[in-house]
Image (cartoon, rainbow, N blue to C red; front, side, top):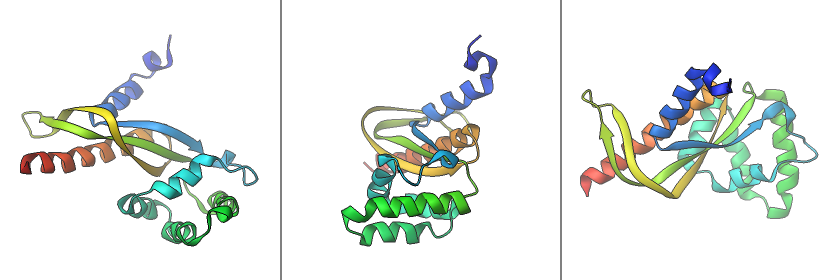
Length: 164
């Protein structure tokens, strides 16, 4: 029997996340991050984070804005050292075992609702998306956060669509 058949609540959570135009694209297990060999993905994270995403992560990991500022003020050749320091700090201070990257669909044509007004789905294509990062306690927790971040993204698009 497959993992999803044994764990239908995971399948439901994945489907809920996808209904909100969100997908998990990367999962980093913080305890296994190597200070001597930081993943290139972390550099990309620091280069591409939006201000609202930085604010969200700051709520999970105090002083994250200081880390971002260090990267913004550093020369590119300093990144490896900064990544090593960041990983070392995560090992010492981070309360979460997972660092998650999600993709949020940005090419939304419409947002549908149920009879109670809750978002039921969307119509769109994945040729344009944004990335967001966050920490999570578990994969289930990551799915919950991704679903909520996706819902907020659809609400923003719905507002833009209703103005158009």
